[in-house]
Length: 499
Image (cartoon, rainbow, N blue to C red; front, side):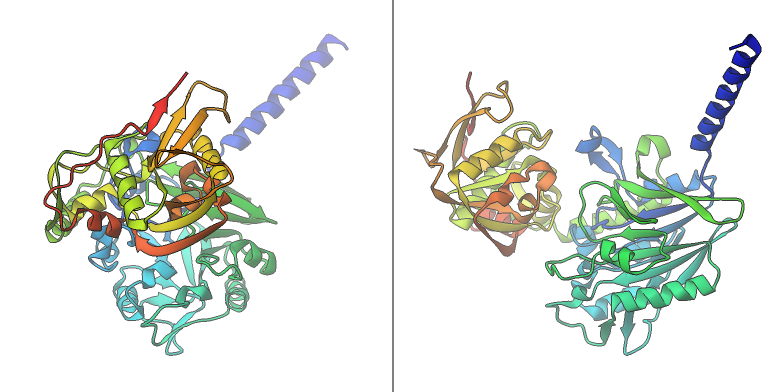
C-alpha cells in the first residue's frame, strides 16, 4: 500500500471512530423520569447498597430535576405509601402534599393503594395536584374526578402520549370497592393507543400496574407488549423489584424500576430529524444527596410530617434490658432477638431472617411502635416452610455468598469456615441441640420476602411446602415485647467459625 493510501485509510478510520464516539455521546432529545413503589420512604437516608451514602427522597429528587437542561416528563407508577407509618397514618394522602411542588405530569395507582378502600383512594385522586392516568378504570361508569383516560405531555418539541392500566386482579378479595370498575386491559390498551396515534404523538408510554399479586393468570407487561403494537415504553410498577431491570419485547422497552425512591428511572428518548423515535435508553439514576443537594422547602415539609407521625406512635410497646444493634456482615444481638421472636411465635424448629431487613437499632429501655417501624420498615409476613435438612443447609450455605446481608438465625448452631471453597463452607449444623438430619423435614419460619429471594437468599424456595400466615413481622415483634416487664435477649454464639 502506498504512503498516501495508508494516510487516507488512517484518516478515514479516525473519522469513522470519531463519528461513532460522537453518536454514543449525543444527549437524548428528551427524558422520561419515573418513580414508583416509593412505599412511604420519601426522605433521604443512608443506603447500605450504596456504601451508606445519603440517597433518595422527594427533596433530593426535586433538586435533581432542577439541574436538568434537557426537556423531560416526570411520571409516578403508584404504590406510594404502604410500608412506613408516615405513609400509612395519612392513608396515602401525604403524597398529594409532598409532591405538589414537583413537576409530575401524571400518576397511576396499584392494588396496594386500595388498602383503605375505593372511597379513600377516590378522594386522593380527586385532590391530587396532577392527574391520575386511568385508561381502564371507571367509577359509576365514568372516569373518576381528578383522572383522565389518556394524557399528552410536552417534552420540548416532542409530544408524549401516555396511557395507564391497572390490572383487574387489583380488586380481587378486597372490600369497600363500591363503584370501582376495572375494564379489560388489552381492549383498553388497543383503544387508547389508537386514540394517541390519531392525535399524532411522537412516542407512546404506558404506565402499568399489571401482573402483580398472586393471580398467575393475570396479564403481564410482556404479554401486553406482544399483543398491542405501538407502545414504545412500558413503565412498570408494583412488582417489588429490589433493583431496576429492563427487557425488550420487539421495539417496546419495559422498565421495572427499583423501589423506595433511592433513585429515579431515567429513560432517554432519541428522535431523528424526522421527529421519529429512533432509540430508547434506560439508566437507574441513583439520587445521591452529595451530588444533587436537597430542596430545603420539601425537606422541611417531610421533617414536619415525620415529626407528626412520630408523636402519634410514641406509645411504648415494651422494654429492653439492653440496646440491640444490627450488623449486615455477621451475627448480631438485634438479629438474634428478631429471629427468636419469629421462632417462638411460629412454634417452629428454626427461624431465619436476612440482616438487611433490620434497618435501625432498638434502644435500651422503652421501645415504641415507631422504633419498631424504623427497625423493620417493611410489610413482610411470617411464612412457614416445611423443608428437608439438606435443603436448609444448602440455603444457609448459599446465603454466605450474599454480600452485606448475613442470615440471622434462631434454633440453629452453624459451624462454618468462611475461607473454605464455596459450597463447602458449612461443616455441620445443630438444630435445637441435635445434629441436622438431611432427610428429615423441619418447620422453619422466614418472611415472604426471603422466600421470594430476599436480596440474594433464594434457596429457601426449595421447600416442600410453605404457608404465608399474612401476619406482619412488626405484629410478631410487638407481641414479643408486650406483657413483659423487661426483655433480656439471649446471648448465644450461633454462627461458630471452625478451621
